[in-house]
Image (cartoon, rainbow, N blue to C red; front, side):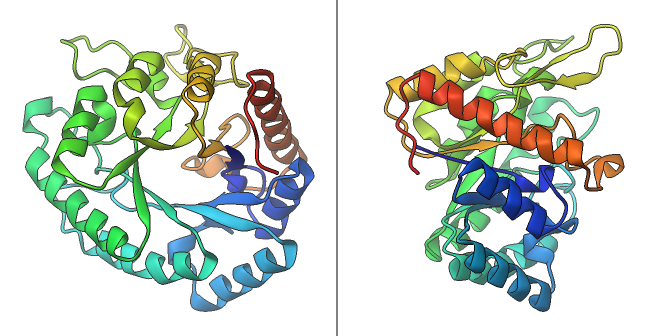
Length: 294
């Protein structure tokens, strides 16, 4: 097992991301954005500079946190952008030696019931993307986020059944803030533990977030790991018990939320929050008996 994280939550620039990673004593970054640009959309010149910085620092990219088929993409629109991003990502991942890429299954169509969410078209597109990556020696992992597969564990299982070779990145925090479309209206929020238990055998990678819904405001409140409703300790204990040997990637969201433009700048508080979050996760895993790779 090894620790990594969305280091763009520590700093916007790669130098700050590397500094946070080295301060934690880690060797990996889950690379999502550098200077607010997703890594598969960087110019060739900017990507070359990033490769040089990472090589000089001795830091590897274990996963691309791509925007492919994510919550910003409409299944009713052509998939040209996703295919272009995938084709740009592949040689960049190969150059960096990254073996995982996070993808999704397109945004949920608003005000449309689950059975009318164009499931077959989603399956077709995710299958196409999955074959593209697998043929290049890269493992795509689907995240239970604001997308078709994130509507509930049964939707993720349907996706897995329809797309051979696809695996999962399970995010502990997303169920806390996501309505369970497997249940009748008014859809309750999901249980992280329940979702996890139903998909555990397909998990190849894990994101750690925690938090709770504020009943007064109806808004998400992100917390330190084990201080929210995401069952982080219980899930991590189960991962250790079952011999999970993959990556644990932190995504705190406490001082910076990637898709919130108001949280785009660097700040000492943001940097310190990320480092403290990482230290708490490392302590939790060691206390649970996990063997962490250096």
